[in-house]
Image 1 (cartoon, rainbow, N blue to C red):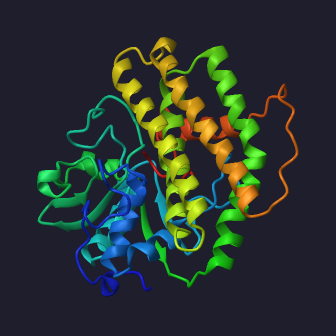
Image 2 (cartoon, rainbow, N blue to C red):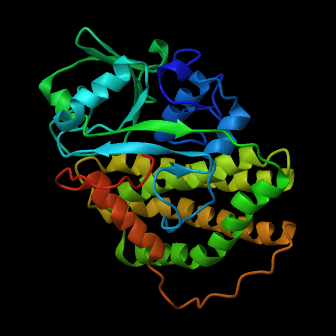
Length: 349
């Protein structure tokens, strides 16, 4: 499928009735990033099964097994700058030509944002779909449903500066069958879970011992809602016809991850001006434990239904910081004191 304006068959939209898994809200199954990508691909004529199979990736709790922002059938090409004015001309040329661009704005400069003028947070994505007469139009999962999840924002020097990270979507669907889906999604997920669950348990031990606060808690929700939940959900959608029993287990684990991510977001709001109060996040530990249990069951079912030998037992007393290091990377990427040019880590919340 070609990229660019010529490939668009209809204008991109955010529509719950058309979207994958969107029941109670836009974060059902997908992240804000993937809602943007989904919209761009649907505008090019891809069906929901094609979108799910193109975007699905094996679960990787450590986040170091594949190139960032790559999918099974494509990738995102990111442009990163400290100041969005550095690549504003390219961004404008793409959007004006009809190429929707995924935009990760610096919320410090984003008009109307709760963190405007307060924090340099980069943890949310919108899809830029039009730019004319000094106004940019974006699709935004946080925008009012009554307006079709659209925002129309006047272009100012501050807004231009805040457009410091954007990406174009490059996806070409490839036919899949039970064999390719098993080899590229299910077996790698089974292997990774066997290796990564001990590191997830280390996060739980660290949380119980030291507490969880502030930007680290926010970084954890980015990992959970930006990567873990979508991987599980999209894999479930991709293998629904070929491996229905495993699709059910994947979807159950996805929902457990979603509950954890939303619980963390609720705790952020409750924390308000006291984000370093460990008591705020202590009640979320139950959701973390439930998610860990769902992932453990998924690992066992993958090995059983795929007839794969079980992984060797891990040392329960050994700390493995592989997942925590991912949280730390995302804390620096999304919530650093200064915006830094670097490679993208996750898919937003």
